[in-house]
Image (cartoon, rainbow, N blue to C red):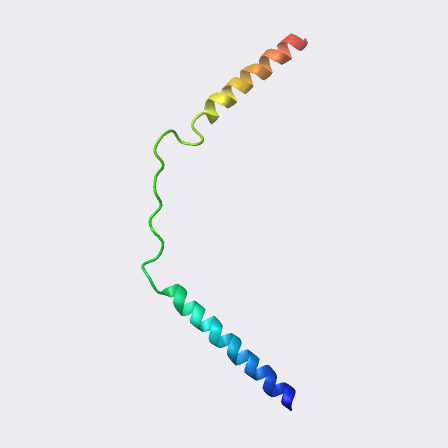
Length: 65
């Protein structure tokens, strides 16, 4: 019988800490809004790179023949 009391006590303690952590997370104003980086976008040259790769591949395939 002692084993069941010990299990229930540990369960209550675990639930207490879990609930207090959940209430702590809910409070506050939330995270700040994301900032927009200044400068060029990360994927700005992707289209130019793909076009250059396409032309390079076509050139290599014509040279091979």
